[in-house]
Image (cartoon, rainbow, N blue to C red; front, side, top):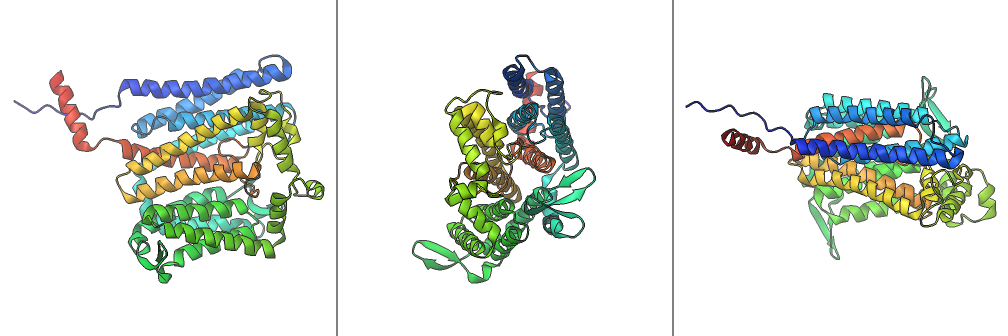
Length: 458
């Protein structure tokens, strides 16, 4: 009797249907929000709602089909969660466009979304095995550094709103730091996998903490110097915080040493205090943080007006909000980018903001679950680093607009208008999806056993 051939077990049809249902639900919520905005402003459903809905639904269906083909075992929640956040961001930008505020353009953001989905698909198709990135550890580090310093170069660098974080490209500007952070995370993951045994060694013991050896402080000091350089030369507090904070988190994941976290906090506080004493732009941020209600700071260029208007808006929204299309987001400077979170808070209230934060938290949780389930240390570090990067960015944004921490100039992932952040975040999601597929895919023996069971059941 010949042995029956064993075919790989396909993803259960019920699971595929569940993924599609969640994706459709996210698009339906977006369409409902569009209708709400139109009814509140003009008393009628927006004429372009069907176009927006079909476009967004078509883009996400294309993303799902690529995911189903090239990463079928990936976490089924990641794409629907991103679709919901991206869709609500489109709605808020459309709402600002309707009141002719800040040059908002929902069509432009929809175009960026389409390009982001293309990059998502290309990443999944080209990067069949994410572990290949480990072989490019130092190449990724070099690319990240070049991208990070490129705005400082003459002719291509551009200074906007006091920060030199942009480069000129045909048709507009590009913020290379958004892509540099992904390259640097690949470098951090590869480097820490190779050096984690050395970095985990304990030196002297201080109270209840095992301090690292002095000779092993080089990586954290270099990263600290890099983040200070970004803060001082480019006046980019946000990227400085993201880079250093994410490296410390990945260092902790790799070594499980609390001492690295404490050293990182001390270095950051010391660097921030030093920069505040020496550099005017850092001192100005600190003054706004301490005294946002000061009338002199309110009217000063780069002062506290945007912060106070954001706080007023969230206060006006209360618990349930004024309703989509019934607030005054045009009063908030930079509501289209840095301050889109308070603009949403006015119209959806505290309840809406908490729901939005829960969606972000669930997205981060799925990334961390991928890190825990990963079978190799490189995947654990990279998935954990990307998840922390997303969570850290949300904390910095929300903390800044609520005056919990000084303002940094970061934008809300997938919601704020702009191409650089949106495109880089879609690539980030593609990397998480690829690693999730690898972590959740059944082992070959398990697939063979299940296949044999199906054969004999026939």
